[in-house]
Length: 362
Image (cartoon, rainbow, N blue to C red):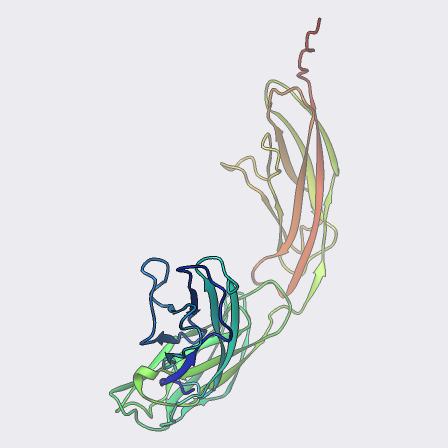
């Protein structure tokens, strides 16, 4: 079948169904991946259960071997791609009452021949762009124009990015008219900073829309991303104590421990502390600031200087001892030239001084 055209075929049952009185076999055609629509002069539509985009044919003991004609329309694609496509046509055979055709299904393979006609080319310069990732986002650029004037008033070229995450283009589409079709328009490529040390690659695909009438083969621009990080290293937090014991009282109880790094980073790093799952335990890295602070910053010069973390245990009045885990994560800050990662934890054992009274028994 051809894109944008109709194809006609017939359907009937291979064998006579075994049906009780007033029972029928309903043959349903589901919309395929290309969005094809079905119509039939022989179709009987269920008033309630059949959606508007589904065609249903009716067979019974009398007409089971009579061909019913179906016309399928394959719509035009939104963009020119000059590529034939394949899809599956799903046909369901459903008996309305008890019968041997109850809930069966078959699939017909389809090949849709593309009908795109070239009317010009999309010209990109250069076809490959190299961008170096920076802490604020690296950028690069290239230009786009057409090889011929569009037949309509304007032709729209859509840009789509595939591959590496964090690669974006501006603008996302370009409009060429009968007067500026051969004037190069600039596309800016931006690469967002990430926290790995891996180089990456992305592809920007350029396609014209069917609505503009300018048929052109899709054209790709390759984006080669050089990562700003020179490498990666592991730096773990070092604690003054990896386990802390606290006694729960009627008033909140505080305890402290210190954190430093196992080695010097090449640039500033942060240690983030996750608030524990125990709702009666809080951590604060700066008690002089309003609210709970959960980050510590270390530099290449103060990495070995211990910084204090304050732990607060609140009364829960349940009479049960409890525990908490304080998870610490080390990570690079924006602008670093290497990826730093590390982790460690401090465990907290809480002795509840409130003992529940014994249960009285007789």
